[in-house]
Image 1: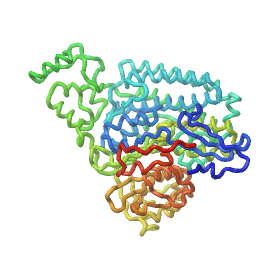
Image 2: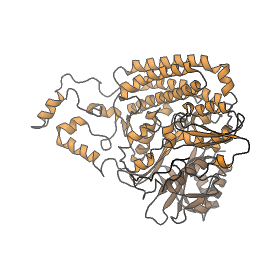
Image 3: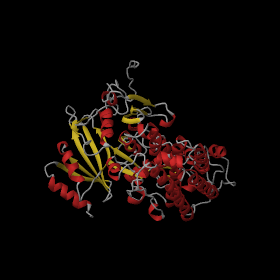
Image 4: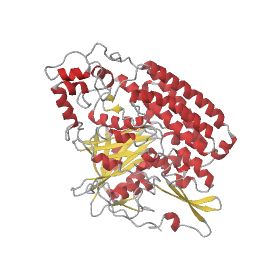
Length: 442
Length: 161
C-alpha cells in the first residue's frame, strides 16, 4: 500500500525521509516530507517502531504484575505513570491512602515532572545547537535523581508507587538531598534562562514558528504544557485535584501565542512551580509513624528464620530480610489496608499465616481483584493528561486496559503544523512537543 | 455559562430519546450507551453551546468475544468550560463492524481511529486515510482482539525494494 504522501506527490517536488534513525527524531519516529525547494508542502508521520503491545500484555498479566510495565511507558517520568495506574486501581478498590504517602507521591511526582521538562527542553535546545544547556539540564537532573535513587532504589524503572501507598519511606537524610536538588535545579534554571530565553539564534528558530491556535489545540485534544502554551487554562491538578494538590499553592503558567517558544517558556515556568510545590510539601509532610532506623537490639534474620521452625518468634528482627523495602512498623504511615498490598517478608519467612497470605497474594486467581466495572482516571503527566481506562471483569486480570497517551494527540498535529515551514523548523517543533516513544507507541 | 451535569444528561435524553439506550454511572463516571448511528449527531450536538464538549479525550474499542454485539466503541468527550468528562459507548456487530468516523469534527480522531482499526479491525466510514497506525503493512489479523493468541508468530514479509 502506497503512503498518502506518495499518492499526493506533486510534479517537481522531492520526497525526503527523516528518521526513524535520525538524531532529532528521538529514535523512533519516521517523518516523510515532500519538499518544494526547502519548503514543506506535505508531511506524513509513521510510527510504531517502539510498539511492544502494552495493552495486550496487560490483558494477560495480573494487576500487580502490570505495575512494572507502567514504568516503561513514559520512561522519563516513570513515577507519574506509576501514580496514574495505581490511583486508577485505588478508585476502583476504594482505598484511602495515608497522608504521608500522599505527600511522598506528590514530591516524587513533581520532581518527575521537572525531570520530564528538563529532558524535553535539553533535547530541544541541543537540537537547536545549544549543547551547553543540554549538559546543564542533565546536571540538574542528576541531583534530582540522587533523591529518586536513594528513595526508590532505581533511576528510571522505579515501580515505587504501590496500590495503597508507596513501597517504602524516604531515607533518613532525604530533606538535605531534596534541599540540594531544589537549589541546584534553581541555579540551572537561572543559567538556562540566561542562555536561551533572550538568545537571538534560539528566538529566530522558535518565535512564531509552528503557531497553534486555541481552537486547533483543543480540536487535536492537546493537554498539558502544550495546551497551556496557547493560553487555555487546563491542568488536571487544578481541574480535578487528586492527592494533596488542593492543599498546596501553585500557579498555572500560560503562554500567549502558542508557538515553539511559548511551549519552551511554559515548561521553564512550570518547573519553577513544581519546585515550589516540593518546598511546600517538605514543610507540610506529616512525621513518620515510627523512627526510620534499623533495630540494633533485634535478632539476625537468619537466626529468626531458624528459630521460627521451633516456635513463633517474638521480638524484632535486626535487619529486615524484606525484599520489598517495606517494614511492618512503617506500614501505618505509607501503606493502607492489608488486603491489597504485598505482605511483609518478615512474616512470610517466619510464620505460617504470613506464608499463607503471601501465597494468597501471588497465586493466580487471587491477589488484587477489583469489582466488576469500568473506570477512567487521569493524572497530569509530564506532557499532558495521562489517563488509564480499565475494564475489570472481577478477576485478577484486567479485561481491557487502555492508556490515554498525551503525546499521541500532540504529535498527531505535527503533520499539519510543519506545512509551509522549512525543513529546519521540523526539529524545534518536534522537540517542543516532547515526543516519548514508549508512550506514543505503547 | 454554567450548566450542571444533570441538566446536560437530561437535555441529551430529551433530544435523543430513541437513540440513547442506557445511562449509568460507575465509580463516579457517567456512561451513556448509544446507538451507533447517532454518534455523529450526538457529537455535533454536544459541540454547541452551552454544552461545549469540544475535546475528544480518548477513543478506544473493547472486544467482548462471544457476545452477539462483539465490539464496543468507547468515546471520552471533555468539556473545558464545565471541566466535565462524559463517556459514550456504542456496540457493533461482528459481521458489520463499521461506525461513522469523527474525523470531520475532531482532528485527533484521525490517528485514534487508525489505532482502533489497527488493533481491532473496526472500520470507520468517512475516514480519509484508514491505514494501520502501529503495525506494518502485511500484518495479519488484529492484535488486541481476544481471539488473537498472545504469542502468535507473524509470517515473514518480503524485504521492501
